[in-house]
Length: 112
Image 1 (tube, rainbow, N blue to C red):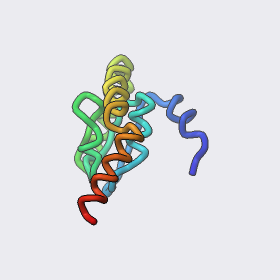
Image 2 (image 1 turned 45 degrees about the vertical axis):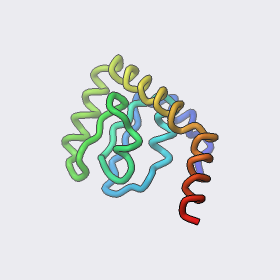
Image 3 (image 1 turned 90 degrees about the horizontal axis):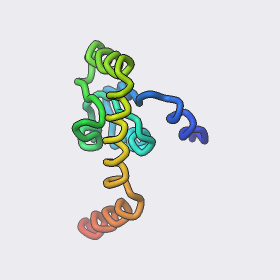
Image 4 (image 1 turned 60 degrees about the horizontal axis):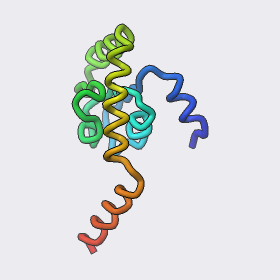
């Protein structure tokens, strides 16, 4: 586990995840909490994690689509900051530790 994730994210203009398969990637939540726009393939739970306006989701296996999203952000840092703001607000509202713990308690209670 890296100890320098906050510093790495602080130095980035955006977060890119080019996976063919994913579950529920913590890295996406960390990037959003750091106020970074997410440019990612729409796999696993990623579409549920990244709301409209917080980045760009592209089909897996289409590197040119991911390249276009990266180019868009690189050419418009104002857009990157705006998307990062949306991401950070969403993360504060949805990824709160206490709220997530309660959600897991409800889930475990429902299946037991």
